Length: 347
Image (cartoon, rainbow, N blue to C red; front, side, top):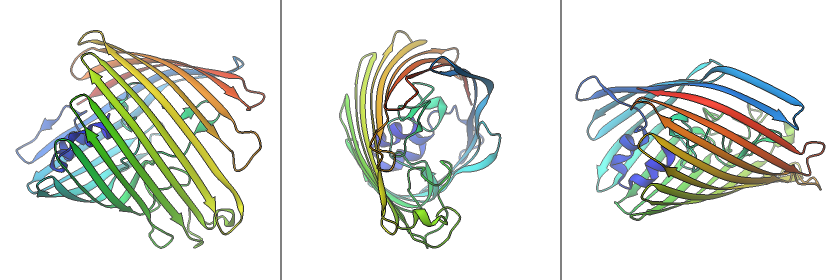
C-alpha cells in the first residue's frame, strides 16, 4: 500500500521510488519513466436486504511520470475516478540532501492511514473507515498542497508538513486541498519505527479555517472550524502472514458558532495469508462511531470483510470482497452487505 511502503522505506531519499512501487515502471531513458494503472469494478450493495444497487464500470485510472535528475526528482500524475473527471493528482518535486533528509514541495498525499489511496495497493476493495449506511468517517486526509521535510534511517522515518489544508476530507475533495492559506493552514507530522518484522506508525494532523467566505468555508455555520486527527497503526510480518491493527480519532470544533463538536473514531484489524505466489486471503474486522454533532444517539458500525486476491500476471490481479456490516443506533437500518470484484492492471 502506498502510504505504508513510503513510511517503511526509512531513508527519505528512497521515498520517491517507494511511493510509486505499485507500478510496473516503463523506462523512457535514464531520467524519465512512466507508470500507472487501470482498475475496473463490478459490485453490489444492499441495506437491510431491501435496497440493492449494482454497478459495473471503470473505478480508477492513473498515469504517472517520474523524473530523476539527482539530487532533484519529481512526480506528476493524471487521475480519473468513477466520475470520469480527469485531474492532476500528484505534482511535486523532492530535493535529496543526503544522509536520509529530503525536502518536498507541491501536491502530494497525506501520510496518515494504513490503507492506501491507490486501489492497486489495497488488500481489500473498501475501507475500514467507510460503512455503506453511514458513509466515510473523517480522520484520514487525502491529497493537499504544501511543503514537507522528511528524515530517517533504515530503522525509522519522520516528517513534518505545512499545508494549504488538512481537514480530513470534511470540506474538500480527497484529490486536493482548499488551495488557500489565507483562511488558515494545515499541519501534519509522523514518526515510523521499522524493525525486521514489526512496523509502528504514529501520525497527527491539524486544520483551521477562518471566516473568510471562501468557497469551502463560506457557510457561517462552519466559521471558526478547527479539526484534529490522530492515527496509529502497527504491522507485523512473519513468513506468509501479515497482521495489522489501526486506530484513528478525529475531532472538529466550531469556535465562532458554539455548535457541538463532531467526534468520530474507527479501528481495524487485518490478517493476510499468502497461500502461494498467486493467491492471498485477507480478513478484516473494523468498527467506528460518530457523535453526529452532539446527538444523543451515537451511530456505530461493525464491519466484517473477507477478500481473496489472485495474481494473474505481474501486471494483472483479480481481487474480490464480501463485507457484512451491522449498525447500532442508526434506526431503521440494522445491517448492510457488499460484494465486489476488481480487475487491477498496472503498467
